Length: 359
Ligand code: PEP
Ligand code: MN
Image (cartoon, rainbow, N blue to C red):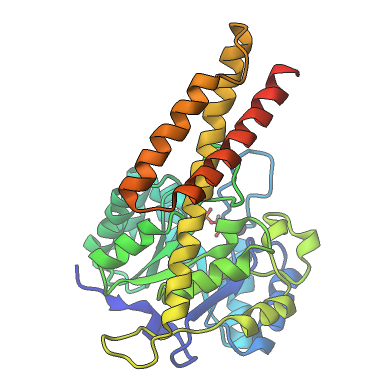
């Protein structure tokens, strides 16, 4: 595939990452125009987003205003000079969006997950000259993401971008959608010419996490950010927890550091920052392992309770110390340090089992 970089076509802010912002959904003329008005004052937004057809997990919630809202987006273009983008999920959406002069279309995570939907959209795009952004599918499946990009590309669309918005994870997590950074990194490695954006709003599901996820995306060299904003987030009809007011978005942006791609031999390489990033990733991996370990411990606790076995088993503890000391030696780690780590893990194991047994 041979792509035309979407970011350079759209951005009007030099080497800064492309910025897409606007409400999760277009709710009313007033909301759309007030939000656009706030964003125009930031002088930083390249593309105004608003969902006109909202794919909702459960029925009976706000599903978008449809065609009526496309007229509000036309006003955004004429009043504030923004280019606009909406999510399309069917051939009819594509026709309507183009009829009302939407500049860029995007395919949402739920649609990307369904090849029939993507193909329908791709067929409707044949012969049209409109840039398209493809969000990753809800599940962590790189091939499915690539497949959707291919279907759109095969319809003749070369102004294409991928949007990383995280992946569904069944279980407790600090994220609404797990970022699984290795997937966008792999996509970038396979298709270096394809514009790659990040949507920290849908990764985090709350405002608090967005700055660091956005910074990480920039640190990884992503070309743009899609961040939801609403002039009155507290009244939003969808995704209210994760939307910034335009002003608050301005503050977040002011703290983001735009990094440049480093080339071999570049004198500006800040070695410490690079190494600390690796440490951050390793620590995150360690904590994920601790969480997995605790899950198993809970199963052990339940089993012991059912079979009336005492929590502390001296032989097992001695075996742990012996085997881990062996591994430590083999890995060239400090024996003392590994023993301390084992003790910490063991303490927590006993605490968890105790809590379970005496519930
Ligand atoms: C959205 O951008 O508001 C949206 C519905 O996103 P996603 O498809 O990533 O869930
Ligand atoms: Mn949303």
